[in-house]
Image 1: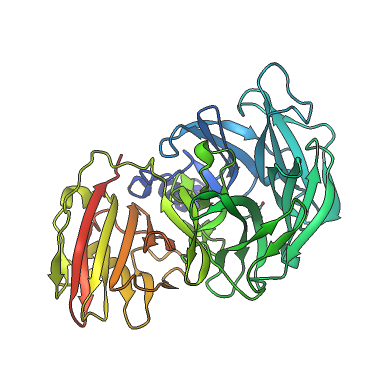
Image 2: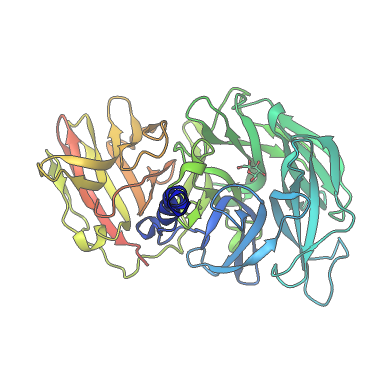
Length: 507
Ligand code: FRU
């Protein structure tokens, strides 16, 4: 009997052991991760009284999706986070994605004391596959503790798929406006309210752009064109997820919003993507950020393989928060993104600056103390000569038997003939899912003869900002801990390296 028990229990205990090994070498230095357990979408992004709040889809008990609740963290700079207790726990319903507003004029009547209250609008998922409805909770202590509203639900259309409310204050009409999706109808529906509790259905927008994958996590913002606050447009963000065409994608529409309806400036067929990688999803903007900044934060993963992410004791992370701007380009108004300026190198420690050399073959760059930590930023500017392809290779690992060969590497390259920026993670390390090895490609014109790349590496992720943030590509990678060689490369000719700057972000 003892023997039988041993045989039965031994493999289980082995499994438990592998599960309990912390994957510290994949814990990002400057990307948000929960201390432990699962996260997906960022929720309720709001700045209030010196604190950036990050609520997030969270399973408090396990390293997989389930028991959905809102986790909570605050930060002064969006880089270092203070982890707080669960903000909104599951009860008979799961707490799906949503947003938070500060109710400055106490329109809801929930304020107690002198300080305005925070109001969260989120989706309650009945996790019986039968219903999703919009619920409300409020906090009178800067988001630390929340009361679920006794009058919930605030919107119930008796629908199975109806989720992800994003609420803004619409100055012109002096109303709260909620954008919320009918995912399988590829539709954003707008509701308006005076008090955040009673909502009236207004206009809707949909069936444009990407309509093969379900729509989730909508968000509306008003944004200046070329920095001119007197001349603005509205952006409507929608995340789209589904099996075809690289699975995930976040789109944006540029247009007008009058308080009830969104009007797309482009043709219904136009598809504008926020990011061309596989790991950028469910991003929403910060409400009330200082100086009217537009800051976007996404979940750095993909429903195709989110459950297979091999990290422990956490699973899931956020992208780097991005500053957004809208600029007039020869193709029309386009979104530009940059990593937030608060992301400062540990020391202003730059290894190479103003290099200005001509590269005719691959070149390993010696900066081992920075590269060894695998949390850094590379800024590189190329002037195209005869090269057909060029770029950088990161997190490279040499073959033990042949040190001219690399068994692991992630490539960020530019294809001159096709005028495309690409990120190749086919040899980036652990393959966590059959579709994980992939090459992400985005059209990106040269600026004259110049191609610029800003690349953020952080242990298990790479985010590329091409040509001043016109194009971004975000991917997870799972390299071995000692895969930390960094090279410049060129194929089929020469390229001039006008600038190469590496900054230590190990923090
Ligand atoms: C998007 C999403 C949302 C939903 C949440 C559930 O990633 O599917 O639509 O509210 O995740 O965790």
